[in-house]
Length: 478
Image 1: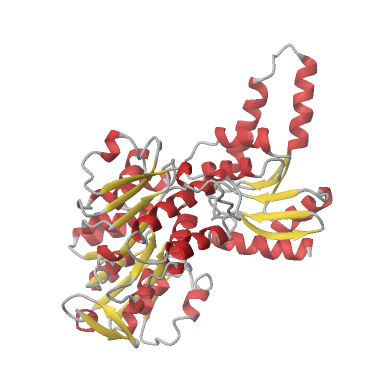
Image 2: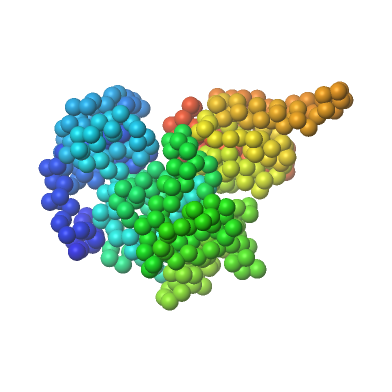
């Protein structure tokens, strides 16, 4: 049925959301500063629920989120700790997606029979799978989802962009009408909610699957299975778009049992004269995925030509190989969203000869291939401190020693000199790092910030890292 919510016509389930949540005791387990917890808190407070927020971080750290909740003075806060008694109090627990399944508080809640959801799980109770174009993948999902959104909007569709984009999916519910399509960028964490609810999007897109978040999922098999939820519950009227030739998604083990119609996309699907504005062969794969999706959806209705024009004019996504500086013959790209070695490796290859800024915290991922790409394609490399940086340096040293005969003194010396030119300092301060980079930069140089690692040792998250990098560039380079 339909009703009005904040002045908008909204698709909801049989009972109104106000009757469902008014007076209900809702515990937000993890507020954070990435908008997800904030959006969930605001959503339930507006619907008249009794909301309590608990987070291990203190008031000072959470200030950006707390400031946006001042209009709801009735919200109760328990900060700096979690308490089992708060779990006992709750009728419904909304957990932060980053909380691991073996978290002791989650285990306690489930043992007590409590209803535990992510904000995505609540979203799935309001929006039908037939309305959803779900996009996931280890790298490229943000660009692919953005491309699909832009092309379908240009093609005349009533469409909303939501998901893993820095705000809660619950913020979008008031704007979803019965004919609205929702492009949903979905992380492996958020896909766990699809698994819990046994539902998959009508249109599912997988850009690729590489090792990532193994510190959360434990094994590559678990991570792959989480990604598979995007298609696991489709029926034969649904669609799955996967890259032709992808080792994991094309395998029999992955495809076995999937019921959706599989559409394979590849670079050969793009028109011969296609000239995108953003660089990199990996981005061409993202364009190919979007091209396949909008061809399928706009095949019977919509303006496919305008959609194609939007594809050509697409200028990229913030923090994904984003050109942020182009002055005096020097270009600087911010690729802070590259949080895995595979993502950074692709961009290093795309911008061969660049001065590279990389490193951070390892997520239990291998770094040998990234180190090889650095040695082959980077002009020089500057590091942000962290466990991933330690691993990259170790791999670079192993590469150098493996290629040099032990008794060849001249070759050893030459290799040492090359590595001394390649490997520069390790920093905890972006301004200091960029000051040193600027001192050696000349017209014609390209600087690539592609960490290939997590950020939480020096920054709140990768987006905080990206914003601070932009500010440092503006200050140092002008």
